[in-house]
Image 1 (cartoon, rainbow over the protein chains, first blue to last red):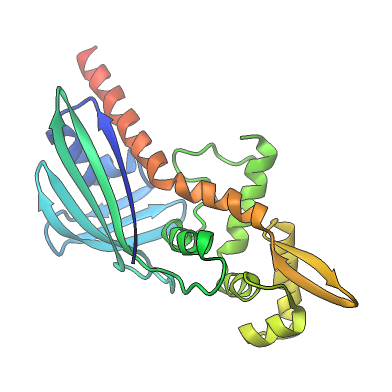
Image 2: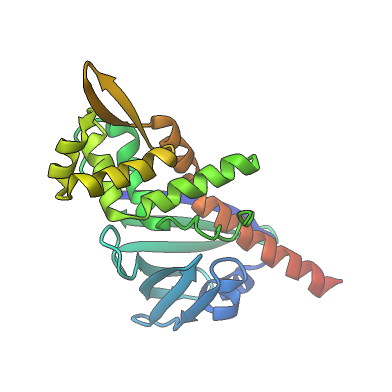
Length: 144
Length: 111
């Protein structure tokens, strides 16, 4: 199974950052256009990103330090709803927060030749599912 | 990134949104193959396979090559590199957006 890790430092306390990971308005302020979140273990995690329905459930909700959700796409064969796992860890750093992201349990795609590239590429493809259609947040909208 | 490159990327992502076309890329990723072989491997008619290969070619993900008199299709690694770059940017782009939103609201709250 493949995984992706990244981190970023944010100039706000963990309590503030945490709200953006578990509330509907907070989530859509930075990711997706629609969110329906029930931040309790087993609660619903639903975010539509550029028309692609990300679906899963909250697995761990430990304010303000950690939130884990399952993550997949409704109707996807490559990465069905809830198939992978996204974890955010929030650590206080001088006056702000370090956010460590880990997206794990991404399916490795069978690799015969060209191991380099495909093993990396197809799981990622499943993750964002061709989210370029409308240009997801963070990207300039595509010209009509 | 130029507007042209963005449009090409959009084409590539749309092309990849289809399961049959991803299956075709899997068939041709190691060795170039003919339409006949591709159609059989993926379980499509030759006509449908040709249609999908046309979409992949326009999107810069597949190229046609000739081997003697045979017309073969292969993965276009340049096109895939562009898509991979995009996908590698997914979470970094999202986290950057999270930071921007929170920090700008912090500023507003203070100001």
